[in-house]
Image 1 (tube, helix red, strand yellow):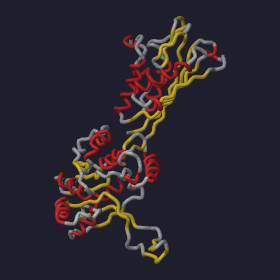
Image 2 (tube, rainbow, N blue to C red):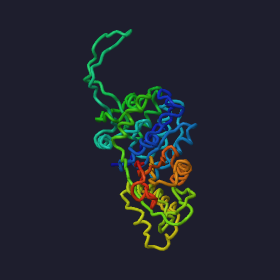
Image 3 (cartoon, rainbow, N blue to C red):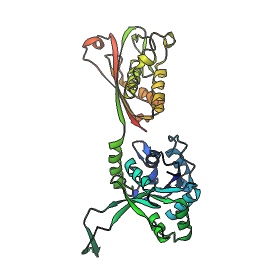
Image 4 (cartoon, one colour):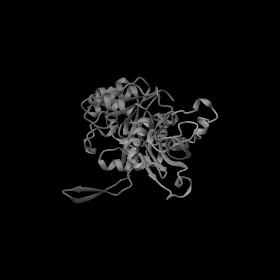
Amino acid sequence: MNSITAIVVAAGRGTRAGSGIPKQYREIAQKPILHYTIDALLAHKAIDNIICVIHNDDKQLYKNAVSRINNPRLSKPVLGGATRSESVFNGIKAASSEYVLIHDGARPCLPIVALKRLINGLEKYNACFLALPIVDTLWSISENKVQKNISREMIWKAQTPQAFKLNEIYNAYENTNKSLTDDVAIAQSAGIEVTPILGAEENIKITTQNDFGLARQIIGNTMDIRVGNGYDVHALGSGSSVTLNGIEISHTKALLGHSDADVAMHAITDAIFGALSAGDIGQWFPPSEQKWKNASSEIFLRKAVLLCKERGFIINHLDCTIICETPKIGPHAEKMRENISKITKIDIDKVSVKATTTEQLGFTGRNEGIAAQATATLIKK
């Protein structure tokens, strides 16, 4: 296959979708719609580069949306025009490949199988586009009254991407009425024969607020969501304070351990390692190694956070339960949440710290030690 450029049209304002920002920059599961759209195109290795066409007012929104995409195939964006057709033409003029795929920035759920069918179609046809045959019954309506049944045999619903030879679609845009809103229509008006390729039901375009719910459902079915559990125990010995989630609390005893014995932060760290299938603290920071003697547990948690980033995950939620009779955790829970939020760089409303007792039963009930358990939820970027 010869060279292919994907042009992502993302210069629209998306007013029908509501919200204060264009729909392509709104988020689903902490990831902008446009990010999903670009990822779907990057999934096919035949696409050599991707050019996004953006609105002049959206430069910072675009920068934020692609900040986690580290792929040389994503080229610098170009600015759009006053209409979709002008924006598409600006993207076409920035391309230098043999073929171009023109794709809506608000179609985040393009499946790889449909994209493969389209690109394979370029081996047979000069121009092709994804589309779906209509399966519902169609009626002509006038003044809110049914007029006549419309045959659906020759009616298909257009999707994107739409694929063309670069030189042909360039000439079509240069010499054709740009008031047309569909690339296939512009190609046809220039005499280019265009062939439909079977698309996919999930390849929806987000247009209204209701479409976001469907997109969340589709994306949720394909997301890599990990859950990890952590549990740790440290004995109490002589001392005057304990450190829990990085917060020092006055106490009649101290936690004993090779490091600073922050049992709560250890549980959170192990929960993250567990979600990554990456072992536990003991494997990463062996207690047999003297360099970890009295080490701050913040070092351990920061390592787990870094590993998340390296493996392409974001931390979606952390929940920590501290199990002890004393000290009382409630007065310090908010500071613990703030500290964990700062270290992990996630919103504080995604960090939960709470406490319980064992009703004076067991080693925690006898004030012989403190236990903690934690759950970490991670999402693949």
